[in-house]
Length: 463
Ligand code: UD1
Ligand code: MG
Image (cartoon, rainbow, N blue to C red; front, side):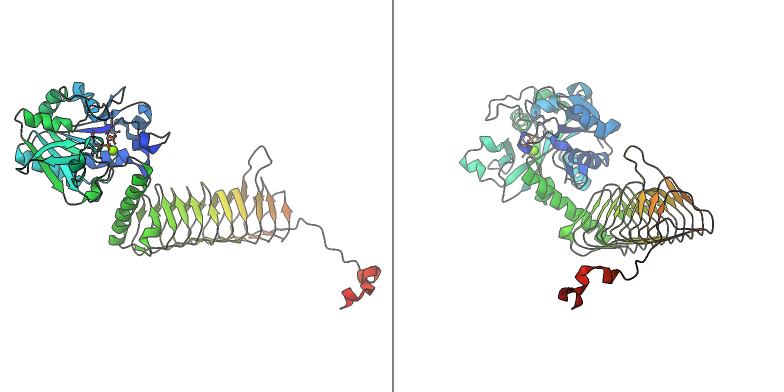
């Protein structure tokens, strides 16, 4: 096997995206497009990967890091000119160089591997990866001669009427004999509709000097989808989403309505978990087995254990241990950790809180900056008053405590184990072990109040 090299083209301005964000950094299912491309080519174990970057290249370099070498294309003069920027890094090498665009995230390593093998078998100087589509608009067309061999590639803007009808397109992926590539690239001109140096023109040049050119037509056009604008971005996203969801279903996850379920590429889900429609599971989230992720939930960068139920709730940068549950309509904000079998019910918000096993926070409660022990019952409408407008304060609630409804815990306080807080209390001091704190005014009843009201005689009141 020849040595393999890869060039990823990623310097284009992406004008058609109309975005401040570098085109190839637009995310698809939670990962920048160019990262997908690099991940797939890495699986082919190339000797070296060179990514061609342009203005604002620091952003790409910070995403891909030292997984790639970089060459900077100062001016975006076309894909041929872009490849030329890798000359210093690669021209001495012997072997095969795969060129691929950073805006085609759906390619799989299997396809790229087949292309490499085909190219090597054919002993060609260049092999173009092509695909057929009934909607070729925007792509370079593969023009074949009467003998069926590829003659040249014509860009959309340079096609004549007949060429525009051709349904075989250039996917923008090629295998080149490395030395031929850098020798012939210098011969590419820019006399075309866009005044750019087109990489595909190398194909015709190699043919003219008697080199062998080959084409490998892949069966699945969808995989070659190039993202030049937001319409293609949404189509690509839908295709990637389908791929991700199908992979989870094959692994034993029930996804009730895959077209309405949004799961990022790096999410892991255990078997027998059921994911209901209209859920979003993003970032580096892991979900265990036998969970129910109910409709309307959004889970981001969180670790969810086994046997967990989440119903229309938002979970961010949090952890839920086995058997716990949350919702409907609750919000776990960053740095919240629920122990085993914890129950978070309706309309609760927790932020930077550790909750011990079996503790229940059932209704309409805010807990911020606190450590709660195990087996606690937090009543309805409890508020942890953790912020004085300038600083945040932390409270500690012992195990087996009972916090009555509508209490305020004014942080910082420490409530010891087995303590009680009477409903409606505003707790500003520590509560000792086994004690009950009542911090509210006693009730007074005004006797015969009714008679003192003049309205008491009115017919309206006596009905
Ligand atoms: C390119 C091909 C077209 C093919 C299509 C497949 C050319 C001239 N055309 O068209 O035949 O059908 O891909 O998706 O190659 N880039 C640079 N520097 C530049 C220009 C572009 O690095 O000066 C990079 C872009 O960041 C992008 C890639 O090259 O990742 C392709 O450029 P793009 O403008 O998207 O080309 P297409 O019009 O899609
Ligand atoms: Mg493109």
